Image (cartoon, rainbow, N blue to C red; front, side):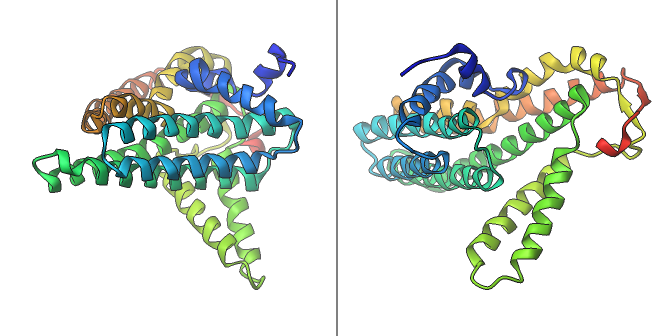
Length: 298
């Protein structure tokens, strides 16, 4: 297996929008997995499905409720995230990234996430004095996890648009998938595909709530100034990403304290989110719009 620094960097997303835990831990391991399977005709989508099964298996093991089960569940969840990184890296190495792969990857993340939270809830319920309170806390953590994932995606869209002048990917994706759904409605036997697309459109619609397109697309922020002012802000946003949640859960479950993970996600991480919103809004007020020379690209 030949390891190329250039190829490894090409397998990553832009460094400004990558999560720190991914860059430090999961992406290097994911790249090794991608290189190992590259020559044996394994596809990115197959890695995605394998990751999903690791997540489901992790949830089942957590539900057993023993200390050994929580350690094994945490290790399986760790493997899930490595594989979840490796599918995209393999796609970028092979140049086979696709719309279907993106949707499948997102669906696998949510299926695995549901299994993890349910498994942890069942496995840990006998260790708490207030089962109802425990399930409420866990539900709040799961909702916070989803909201944080939507927020970080929205902030990535915002940054890539204003700092690099890329089109409004969120708007473009929404319109594209909406047209695709309408097309599939005319084709018999596409119920599953329609269900996946409808679910994804709901996700994109919620994301649009957090990311508003400019009212007047003839004016934009200066990309150079925006990049300098918000590059570090974008890195701060990445600590709300799904990998941060996964790492917190893994570490706490190794010590059989998923309740601590839930409290961290519900309280300090939501406070952190609101603090970032406040800081970013203050910084945005210091920027001025400039004439957009290519309004049709936004």
